[in-house]
Picture 1 (tube, rainbow, N blue to C red):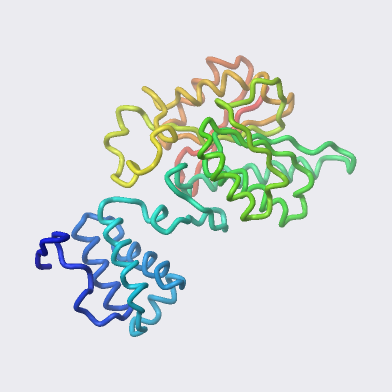
Picture 2: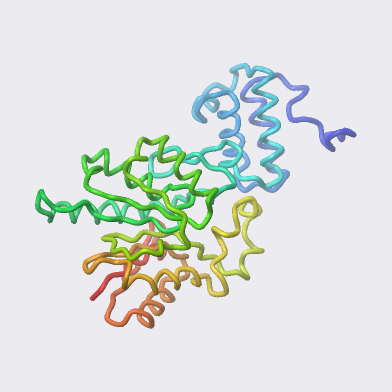
Length: 311
């Protein structure tokens, strides 16, 4: 690409025929040069957003013309991605557990591996409901450090689809007021705002509580590894990633609260890093005498969720 005085490079596709195929090729080339790991996929997602169609549609019709406004937006979005900004923030959404969540720098972008935590929580709720009498009290659930609300909203929406939405009472907490605003927006978008109470708190509210399920995807990246994370993560709030010296400092604080926060037969499901399986078992054994900690694997066969309970 030849240099220009205004932007350093020629705008993508400025002299090309404005078709989806030409724009995708130019966008992928630009992102490949910038170091993107998935240049073609990124370009497809961004063009789909710009033209208001799905990624599949733009791939299937390379000859389709693209209007000048959509082409300009696409080029601008490609340049944002070239600086390292996550595609999810540029698009303003991220798919998670079959739902589209609004995302922006107020909270961490939901990761696919976190879906394992939701799967386990959903299975546990349905198991308990199957054992309960018709007059049983609603199950009390808390999502600690809710961020975008992905876990709480996905679980509530899935249980509603299964006819169990009225069988739970859910609290979602976060220390960040901005994240809580985003979580509420997502709850409203998926029509589960009436099933979730959002509350600002450092982990858990000050008042005593006993939950049947404690769910959490807390920061678990080691502090000295933060600088080595992909560039895209620098656009996300460090508060949602930095887990302290060993990566488990905040998880450690929540574990200390479980004797009060967890009902007698309750279970805590905590997401952990893929290299923290042994560490979380050791942590629980040292802090909670007589408790059990089982580590569940994700689809890649890596440690992902610690299941903690009494006995």
